[in-house]
Amino acid sequence: MFSGSDPDAAPVEKLSPDELAERTHNLVGYHYTVDDYYEVGREEVRKHAMSVQDAHPTHWSEAAAAEYGYDSLVAAPTFVSAFGITAQRYLFEHVVKGYDLWQIMQTDQRLIFHQPMKVGDQLICDVSLDSHRHMSKPESLDMLVSKNVIWNQHDEPVMTTYTSLVARTGVEVDPELVDQLDHVMAKCDKFGDPGKTVNRPPAQPGQPDPTQSPGPGKAIDFDTLTVGQEFAPKSFLLTRGNLVNYAGVVGDPNPIHFSDHVVQAAKLDGVVAHGMQTMGLGATYVSEFIGDPGAFCEYNVRFTSPVYVPADDYTSVDFSAKVKSLDPETRKGTIALTAKQGERKIFGRATVVVQFN
Image 1 (spheres, rainbow, N blue to C red):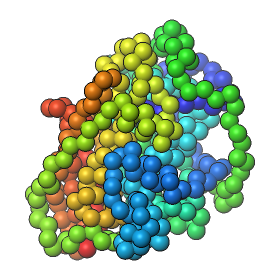
Image 2: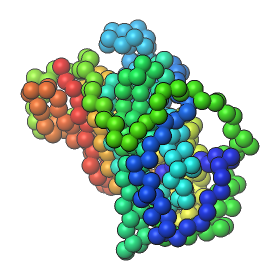
Image 3: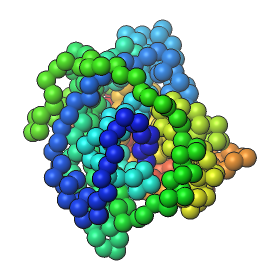
Image 4: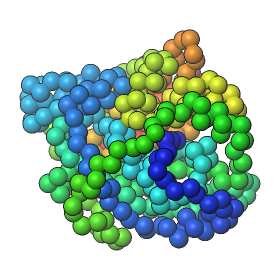
């Protein structure tokens, strides 16, 4: 889910589900470039790595990163969540307007890596609404895909992301819930204005997508792998403290990640972990096996069930994986990833494409 609101944003007119779907459909292909770049900081890389329980040395030590061939600390594979929410928030507050926080659920995330994100990168984001589809039965649903193409200050592509969302547009939000939200959401009287720091030509519809892929770095040798090879399973513990810390790191104030009061009012089953937090734990698990997080080429997840975290105890997210396929010509491999909370699957489909040595 995406949350947070701009106090300076203009009020949105109330449209029927069909009217909203028509307006949104007409925006498919709309492109814009975020006005302000995002600079990757040393401590932010470490804070994000801690939030996804990733102790790989390239995220923590410059000396270790240099041994892996990097000139600065490397961000964990899902670090994009630490700034991507800003671009998505702009999309839903200023472009694809009319959707309520409680209507929108993230269903799929696809990350295509062109090179690792590193400390000192000044990231520039081109955002677009890639597709839209409306369904009226059995309930009114809008299915949207937003696309981000992320560049550094050298006009080199860093990452392309596709985020699939489903909005339940026929659901009326209880005014009492809106009031309760107002009393628990983070408050900001007025946002500061950084001005326009990005002075490159804006994104244009139809421009070709980047095709570059990262190198293998110090990933394990392709020839040591076999199709069907299984990883040793691993479990990660999550508490409410983990959820609140992650929310702060990525700047997501959505109270479904910390407030029992709001969760009960919204008739949800419980406080839930961020989807990108569980995706980040999966990346940590895969990184430990392959040896170098900079060798990720693509990471795809379909979210099927949230991770519920109790107020007074931890919960366990259990990962397993196996080598799904290997390509001897490119020396790339696809890893199939499974995540569970108890017997319940968290990911419906999850794969990681890796460039091996």
